[in-house]
Length: 601
Ligand code: GTP
Ligand code: SPV
Ligand code: MN
Figure 1: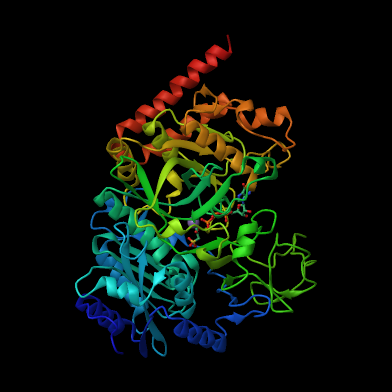
Figure 2 (figure 1 turned 30 degrees about the vertical axis):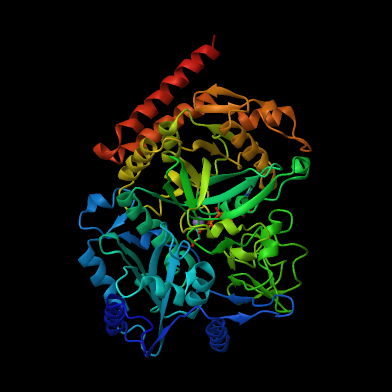
């Protein structure tokens, strides 16, 4: 190979990894269109990608993963720190020597007959104070083509790295893609990630969950900033004022959809315009104004496909018409793609995500429809193609955040929206978030699990220390964002969602921003400020008063139970849990008792 960089540390590391993996050749990714086209052609020739109808879907391709490789595998994901306590009770842990040794056994010789690609990338605008450089080595063209969409890649990054610059070392190998020989390892003390044995999204696009969140959160604590699993969006008022929100929802709980929201008809008279800054990850720093400013470190969306249509997410539909890689969806006869919840009727037949003949009337042994697309099928597409994308994405100083929002899927407990009493109470709200498990990860679907700040699978260090860091950040800000909790997923007794969701979520964002300016009404409740029914603009919505009351209801008995669940969760962290959070759970309990006895007269 001819090295594209004169950075000795980089070249030495590449040589060392190549000696272990033994690729036939090494190819540097320069970010050029020519190279991208060449790689696409090669991937089509080997069958790794299927070229879609280029008239209807220019620049679009389909990829199918192995059937046992369709979501992040959290049980094979480890934080490797010298001390086990530093990984904490919510992470899997291996010692660094043990981690390296186990993975090396799988990596050894695994790239024989293959090419190792070198992908230099920047998380954040190249050269911004927010930004970090990483280099991913991989033997997968699919990974390269995805990375070219997901992050800023290529020569400009190497120029910035220079001869002395430091970078995160990311090594990925497909190996045999055997789930028994799969490991996703993070070595925060060495600024290193090793992932082997998978070909799926979050396991292999190492810039994303591995670097931007797991190593990112570790660095963020050391350097006094925040790396979060959050979307970022701007709401522009007709006056030109733009206010930004950052929201943390667990995987497959609505970040991408909210980030690209289109105002509902009932609110169009108000002339809002929505700007998408990011759909999955926010890196946030305190600026000289004492407020919190955010950048999206990524440049693409890796979004959930099923359910995406012109009603739920018209901006996504417009975004994925070109230059998009689809993973694990249905291939139609006309070489287009289809998925459950797509626009229009299903095709008469097609090839499903497994590569088998499929038609919509197919039923499994229990008589249930056989889905053609995997529930966690994804699109990879450039943010710049999104009709609501903003040029402010590239601003080196980021955008100012007025409100931080936490949320999850809670069929019963959490009201539509409520506001914390303080930053500390807001940290408590985030720390005690819970959600029903979705198809984005292996495990029992629908089970409620605690997912603090939507970071349970992504916090690169002890989560108790992470809570402490959040509390500390509050101390350092003179103008902290206000903190809210939302739940779009409350259900009635028949299992129907009570809230229409999607575009109508703007009604809730409007209330949140009005609250930030001290302009909307609310009532105090044991869990925080809840909207008065009339403080939400529900123009054009056909919701009965009873449904609105139910959406906003705080059920004391259920919350008493929740307090017990929270205490159990907090007990995991032992002495390491910040006292402030213990104080908060006790305060919640006290408020519940007070309000309940007042209600009982
Ligand atoms: P990750 O990419 O895994 O981090 O997911 P995400 O948080 O970006 O979730 P996404 O926006 O892709 O939504 C996941 C699923 O939730 C999709 O099936 C959506 O159709 C559905 N969804 C999103 N927003 C809403 C909503 O407001 N109401 C309801 N009922 N469903 C929603
Ligand atoms: C998530 O699961 O939160 C995702 C998809 O955004 S993945 O990149 O696989 O993590
Ligand atoms: Mn995500």
